[in-house]
Length: 309
Length: 309
Image 1 (cartoon, rainbow over the protein chains, first blue to last red):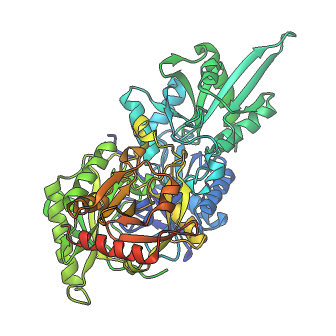
Image 2: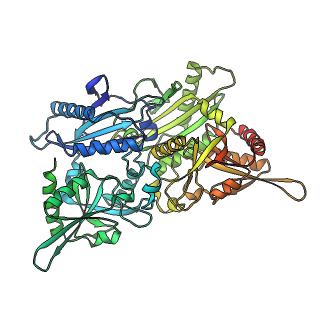
Image 3: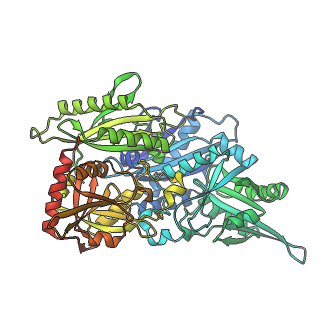
């Protein structure tokens, strides 16, 4: 257990236009809050680099989609933006980055259904320094195991009450899957549907690349991700990277994908907002692609991603 | 929205042998508690009648099983018993029952993984008056719809990381299913597996009864519940009622059950620790059994259940 980074906390509160700052080192939630008693709420985790939140509009839009799926009436995007700016400014004031310019913050937005009987949800922004683990894994890559997610790939469409496309606070299974991976010496998980399709990581989106030399000597590069209608969370990082990769001449593709597609790829990544592109070295102990090509592709896509606002 | 009943709160804390009382009307949880940010924790909900908690040993045992499934190191049963007794005594002192003898309290045990980086979980007991809704539904019965739970009935065995038999705080889907039912004018839900087996309610166990007159004029009564290995939560109330019903001459049966078995039953109930036996009047709008026989069987089983300690 490592000591967690200090947290700056700002509640969204109609009485405070820029949010209501609160001391995160003190208790601030009721035990009867339905976020705590039932995981009944939603969240987003974003990265701020040198004070600017990456893909803030995509995150706010996805938060809105999650709120709709859960029938939560959440604060407006302007209120979120003001509270986010206030929390980041406060973090900069209280905890200046040790190296100027090397300043990555995790910005988490959380909304719960509030305490039993409450008319409005509990909503807050919390900001802390990005953890070292994620930054390290961008460099070293990760070992992954495949785990059954239990759902078939048609479930999202037929059973909206399962909240498949919403980012809810009910993450106990995602966390249990990660613990299961670590007990087996792996770093992370790729979930499969019960009918054998590649879905997503517990906290990330799956990407794979194929590189082909065509007859005339040009190189064709394809970036592929599982199709959204399989009940996965739409990845804001995947979405932004796809746009940037397309502009740079990559072809784009969308699943259905099977485990063999991962094993046959030239490179596989788990992409998420804070850890960014984590190259997958092995899946169930099997080496993916070749280290040199993986490294080259990772550097190229990381460069493209760095240009995203 | 109705105003919730006042809550008495006692934290489990090694420094306090009988638990540490705290003011539930004030914030007592950190926003970084993983119960609140990830639904990463477990709970039990119990009923105390005139100060005595029903089936306390079964609940403490199930809490222990949930803790094991989630790799949580929780306080011992003696500590729980002392904190529960203290919380109930405090509730009696602060909020005496309006009608002496008519005293039903909800006793909830909650354990979260604690704040990020914490060495020990956050654990508490909360006590409040039993809500009127549940007591009313025991009398009036409920209308139920069938909803797909998305998992097939073999998943629990092959994928322990899905935590199927654990009572986790990640209840967002259970709550979404109940909202979905209410939007359709129903009161509750019976989940089906993706392969069409009857599973459980979002917060209850399914029971059904068959009554047959045999040739010699005796009456054969069977009480049936879905088999446990379909990935449902083992019901403490179902378990206790089965023991009592067997002693009273009922035959017992265990699924697999299909929706048609529910429609063909003489009576169906959802049973849970606080609401107890709620007779199911309709499923997807279809009347179940006959009102008179349902009433008779409900009265008999409720009488048997009242004898359970």
